[in-house]
Amino acid sequence: MRSVFRTLTNAATKTLLATKSARHVSLFVLACFSAHFLMPTTVLATDVPAHLSGLDAREGPFERLILRGGILVNGEGAPPVGPVDIVIVGDRIERVAVVGYPGVPILEQRRPEAGPGDREIDISGHYVLPGFVDMHGHIGGSAPNIPPEYVYQLWLAHGITTVREPGSFRGLDWTVEQAERAAANEIAAPRIIPYAGFGMGSAEPIITAEQASAWVRQAQSRGAQGVKFFGAPPRVIRAAIEQANELDMGTMMHHAQLNVVRTNVLDSAAMGLTTMEHWYGLPEALFTDQIIQNYSPDYNYQNEMDRFGEAGNLWAQAAKPGSERWNMVRDRLIELDFTINPTLTIYEASRDAAAQRNAEWHAEYTLPTLTRFFTPSRYAHGSYWFDWTTEHEVAWRENYRLWMAFLNDFKNHGGRVTTGSDSGYIYKIYGFGYIQELELLREAGFNPLEVIRAATLSGAEALGLDEEVGSVIAGKKADLFIVKENPLRNWKVLYGTGHYQLNDQNEPMRTQGVLYTVRDGIVYDAQQLLANVRAIVELAKQEEAE
Image (cartoon, rainbow, N blue to C red):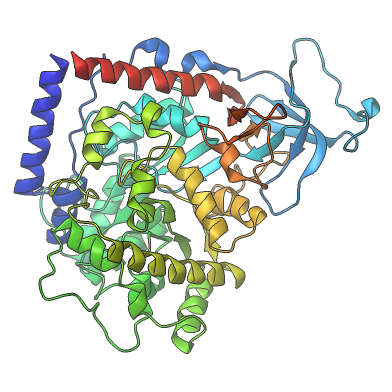
């Protein structure tokens, strides 16, 4: 029965994508949602047994919890310090105490005393970092029937404790309900910040400023904490952003090609947009010898290989590093306190498709429904491998070089860069894709502490949550994770598959990855979460074989 249901669901997906049936949004958003983002939202309750939900992998919150002897990277730019004891009361950090020096016995007189009933965890020599903020994390929304438990546990197992859900493609009401259940600790999940895709739920196209403002107010009343734009007439976007800012809602935008000529990042930033997603709209703002991207005559936006293939030539058309235009765009965005959320990871396959298609975690951690979705298809967004060539990959490598140069320059002059994964597309798996984003920022020129800040405090700042999360200091929420090895030396130790290396006996082995993730004072066993996910994937494979 399940296999029949999945067959019918996949057929319905292709019909939906082919017919572009989404009457409730403006013409541009109609094209984006129906062609790329609206997916079946049904999740079979029986797909994930209760014991694999992640609730069995947690303890707490505790009246008082003490983490003993760790090495702290606090997320604010300070270098590692340790050994430290971290005292957590309920869901908040009460105290961070330095209790000695490396390589010698702990100074016991400096240690916070444990009282009756306190929970203590010895993390001597282990690294403690703030919980990561994924600024672009879809709860499914790509392939059909992705169990939310699968997504949540992979996020938590990679140290991700806060996720901005862009667009709520499973429905705003559903996403808000999940956010509320996560906040109440009814599910094992990161903190969820639900954004609504602009126009979702509207009975008619939004073509006036008044309609835009009214829609934003209605979205907020339903629990949306922000709005994601794909495109609309500038007067509509401006009105919606202004209304969102009045209501203290966040805004984000994918400056897609169908609308970018009228609204690039300079335009939207001046309107008050909070963050740009990916990189669309940025090279267009850097054009000097043209106004419109130089598309080939046969280009068709609905052809996924056209869309991604020609995107690989876009940065080469922009102003060069250090030019007058380059510096002007950089400085203007910084002046407007604009945030760039690049999601470098989601396009990584464009420059090396084989490496991402064959990533080592796919065997145990990728659901069959995702594997099918990633397979080349003219219907599926991001499955653009119709005839992906060496020439495509070479162009995209140059694209990355220039894109990374701008990000590093923007950061070096005081601009805010955050981290997001957009996993569920283009061979990217939840959690794993996020750690790849950290490696890519390092490649872009960010030093390790700058990468950590982008992944923690900078994301919290962009969300307006920096008084609560984003760093490990007294008074903030107890959001952090613990890993045995030093991630500043090697980000690979954070992957759920661990880091492949030789041990002292000249034997190949793997490190474990994250050991514990703490969110709001609740301690999650990351290794148990990973085991749960492996079981979910194996169960799905068995059902496929029936």
